[in-house]
Image 1 (cartoon, rainbow, N blue to C red):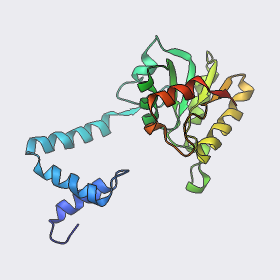
Image 2 (tube, rainbow, N blue to C red):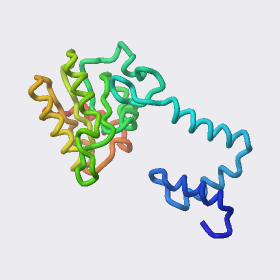
Image 3 (cartoon, rainbow, N blue to C red):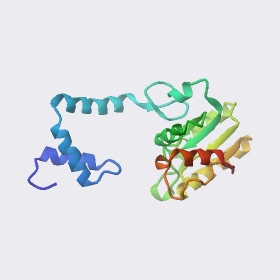
Image 4 (cartoon, rainbow, N blue to C red):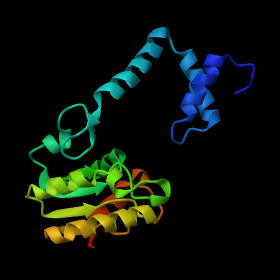
Length: 200
């Protein structure tokens, strides 16, 4: 921002610019918008951030984000708990839930294997997935990582760990574009990818 702006406004814009997908111009617009809020609106905005940061944590079963012990999906007894869909981030669960076609449960890895970025398997929620499966009652694991090099490597790594456990491991069919992101896929593409998944 230009030197003519107040330092607190510059610092606020810099914080917004740290968010994914927000460039400096968008960050400046957001900062100016915050300045147009009333004191009570600005306080409510700040309180919502602090409250979410303090109260939201990972579900003890699937590693999704929740403010309870179990997320609503894991706590739902009508879901098919023998079917686990493994995803990279909590945002991917939202994408699948929009299809209204998947009735299983999920497991969030919170990342993908990427040695070049220093992300090794031990930094993901893989051991938690293995612990769930070793408790029994799981018939199939769907690898729903993004169709990228890292997504493929992660899917193959986990499938090799699961094969000795006599668990059916499938991969989403490639109705999804290579290099694409689940977050931006439409409902029909995701439904077809689920319907045409293949064993790996």
